[in-house]
Length: 260
View 1 (cartoon, rainbow, N blue to C red):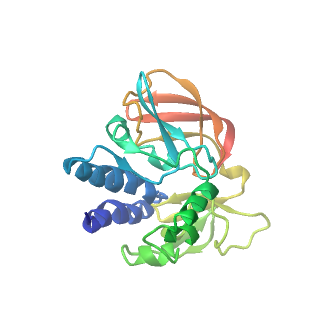
View 2: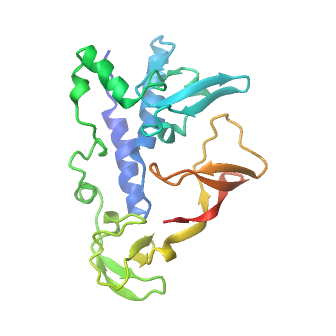
View 3: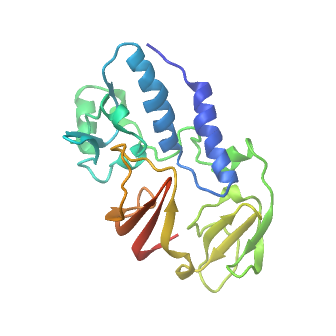
């Protein structure tokens, strides 16, 4: 069977991607695709057609415990993709198979070579699939209008001009076009005022964040504060935190300040 979700992909992933940049936030299109397309529309269609499970090549694991299904990190931690599957809940996990959870990338390539699969020698891409040349700015410019504005320091002093906030992300240091005695980093994309706020690395450190769009794999949100590890981007190391749930949001306190 061949299923087409081009329209849904455009509406739920590409438009989300562009909209988040326009609001001064850096999106994660892979998470949106997993949530809405692969484990939303595709899984629903597979079950409708009589399938019991959907198997994918994600590097992550699933464990069934007395309290329900658990989403686990892959054995090959360098390729772990559980980060991108955080929106999955009990409904999805009970119908999902992740056969690569125990394998390294090298082992999988070896098996693919033995089987004569064309993917065995395919270049591993880190790009967003719908932007193959990795030129985010040009792609976004085709979907939303870009507006020039000021680049300012944390005190509001104008340091230069930007040609549109969509070309930047928090923590970025390259491509600012500024001359300074100290290395400057993007601290904030102030979309409301169309300003790009920059500062030194020390000024980029934060002790806390507010998390929204929460998804609890168990289906049950914690009621009390708890200690856990967390990371704020895919390739960041896990760090110790204190989680304080609050209705649809959660306050995450870092035991040590985190950059950007």
